[in-house]
Length: 307
Figure 1 (cartoon, helix red, strand yellow):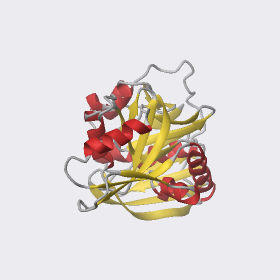
Figure 2 (cartoon, rainbow, N blue to C red; figure 1 turned 180 degrees about the horizontal axis):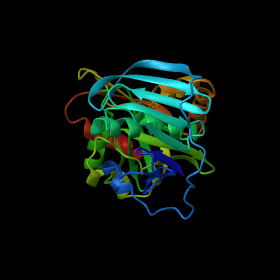
Figure 3 (cartoon, rainbow, N blue to C red; figure 1 turned 180 degrees about the vertical axis):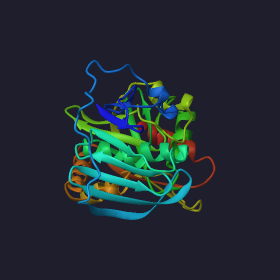
Figure 4 (cartoon, rainbow, N blue to C red; figure 1 turned 90 degrees about the vertical axis):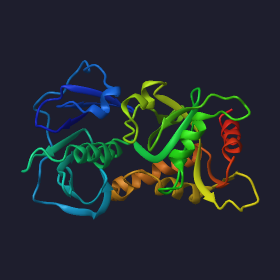
């Protein structure tokens, strides 16, 4: 279990996020659709906690868009974990094994509520899950039955738009498609292949629209498409062009949430994770002209990929 301490208390609210149960010491409304019962074995209060050490190494210092604002973010490595500080929100300690997150309470307190949730469920949680071996693609994803397809791409490429359109129509094959992820798709690798998890907070969606409440939490990842829209004058229709070897691995690495925060051993583990996914899941470039009535053709491509 992953412990998230925002008020310095023992966990009292429990949520299922991907393959992890997260215990939090206060209610988080954005996670309510993913609430679960308390685990049989709750952690003890004397479990070793990360602490703010004077011996730190700065791994990352730059600006990022968090909770509707351009904020400065600093990541430091300490003797037993990591410290993340987000301008206007506060500082957080993440244990080196990803098992515990603790907010350092500073004045003024509490911080901006929207910024707090976006930070905790964004870079802080993403880093903790990565330390536990679960990396999240910056992707939308759709599924037919227990088979999923993920769309990755640059901001503004149309990942979420494609996911929404594909689930609103089924193409000529009359295939029912469900939304798995709108923006963040956790992917793990096991004996059964690559799994994408639907039980993960999609912060751009309302509580009653969360995918994890309506389907299996484990879905076989069948394909990953890098979205590459072109101008409406392109004479060809939508097409899927396979990416091989290093190109596929690089595409996955570039479109992993929080990858800028990874360094040293964690970066190596991330690249290995991308390499494993690329070996077992076809990674392709989805090229399509941005013109009217293209969605029906795209829906047929998707349906064929998920047959």
